[in-house]
Each structure stands twice: as structure tokens, then as C-alpha cells.
Image (cartoon, rainbow, N blue to C red; front, side):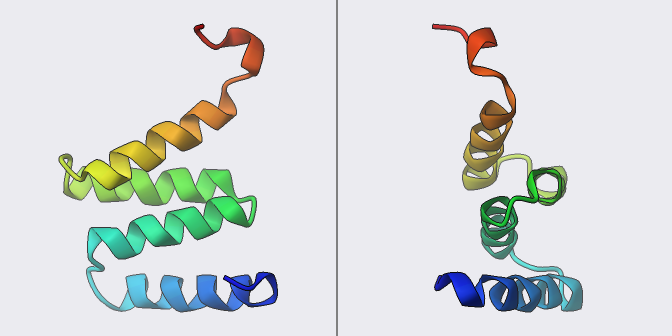
Length: 79
């Protein structure tokens, strides 16, 4: 994404998700965009919604693990 168009892309993805029962991969992309824009709580909510509907969605699992790992302070992480 071009940085100046990130907000526009986010709005478009949110509209697509709201209009239909969006495929999981669209929601994962929305979560990535939310995280890139600094809204980690929204990204985590989006990914948890995906996983509540499809617990085996590996891309959503991977992305959620990555985001949750960003919230853990470095000093508390396992080696």
C-alpha cells in the first residue's frame, strides 16, 4: 500500500467485510492493515472473529500469534 492510501484501503476492506460474510483471507488482510495503522486491538478483534468462525484458518492463527507476540514486552519473552 502507498502510505497515503492506507486509510482508503482500510475503509474499503471494512465496507467489504460489513456487506458480506467476508472470506477469512479478506478479514486477515483487514487485520494486517489495522495493525499497520497502529490499531492492534482492532486487528486482534478481527482475527479472533475469523477464528471463532473457522478455528482451523492457519493464516489467521499465525497473524494473531504474531500480533500477540508484539504485545509481550521483550524482557518477559522466553529465549
